[in-house]
Length: 227
Ligand SMILES: *Cc1c(COP(=O)(O)O)cnc(C)c1O
Image 1 (spheres, rainbow, N blue to C red):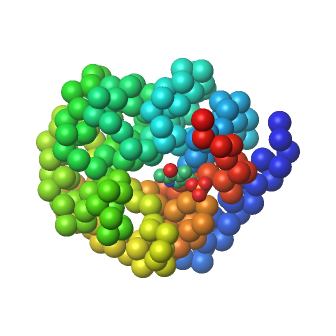
Image 2 (cartoon, rainbow, N blue to C red):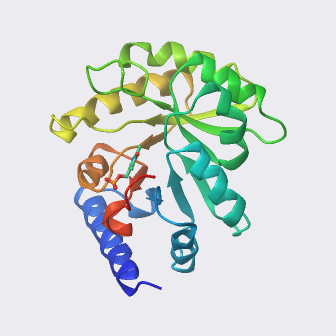
């Protein structure tokens, strides 16, 4: 195994603890998801050996393939953080423990229709940019989406998720996500998760109240090019 991987993981975890303490928060209430997209599945087993139990993927085909190979690792939770096509909802659901990118009613309906047995944890992805082409529901429409998703029997709304825009101070953008979280918790009081914070902005996300960080390159090293 790459010895530097253990070092980078330990370094990021120490920075998480520092940021949490600096914000007066308990580091134990924060889940660090390692984003493994574009890396080989061997990275997931290496991370697992280092104690990682939450991994994130953003493409359905890659998620499905890796889950097929590594899905047997006991206690490993799979987070889907990418845009999902409605016609891939069944495949996404089959390979995910949490879907962070639920941003429209049709996707909720498709994920719900694919459900059987246990409920699927979902987060409502909010678009913090002015560009409607970016993934996520507009902040003004978050409440209506939450109400719709709550009515889907096999989905459990756990909270909200967002990516900070590149052209804005992330702390300011995360304040809008925090406000969306308040809106969602009014209709779903136990939807307390806030998925925010990546390599470049996780301390700001922790200061805002993020409960789930999605950290890739700071831990994995640079991503190989997309195929
Ligand atoms: C790739 C990705 C991340 C991780 O990005 P890094 O900058 O490498 O930490 C987090 N969230 C989403 C939605 C991503 O696609």
